[in-house]
Image 1 (cartoon, rainbow, N blue to C red):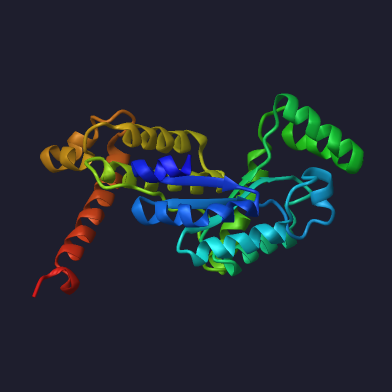
Image 2: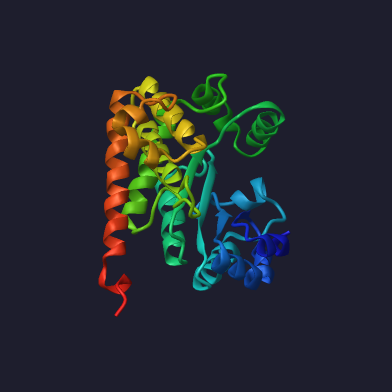
Length: 279
């Protein structure tokens, strides 16, 4: 599959738990040099005693994943941690949150994506059974936290998300993954959508107004899937053109205008920088 991606010039994102990925490192590096690649390592603990035996038996150790992360980073490939799911009362201690972020930064990771555990169907049933076996005192606490819902209470998820964000800032890495955007007529669409998606996430972990959050998310979806260039739309019709995009009203059109202008100014600086002017 990787050979096909390389041949067709298709960028690759890999979510991995096994250092055996290193067997294909040269191939992934070639894809990265041609079109772009990223490797995310699934790591949910580092300071949680006994986690591996209880929840990930027979898998490779966390240390082996961090060692592999360092080799991927040294090869010039973007890499980071998928810190998910963060198990309530097991992986959410300040000690464990900091340990995972710190080890990511030390091993060349540039981001940590954090998310709380979601509960539904057979997965939820098995998880509660595992809790009852190894952490019986946590079963009732989980029921109260989830309150028969799919996700934990938003105040809890927000607190964990804010803590991870603070730790990432402290260790000089990101709490969002930079988006791979290929050149083309919709590249500005993708960049603006990325900005709105990131703002949506920030509002979520701050537990802001749910209606505002959904407004930003829906606008980001519309822009992300828009078939024509929103930059051309703006250049031809101004903010009135932006407001023809589904989900974009007066407030969001102003924000999108600023983002487009910023991207245009950045492109102008690149075109006129000394490095780009021929002798």
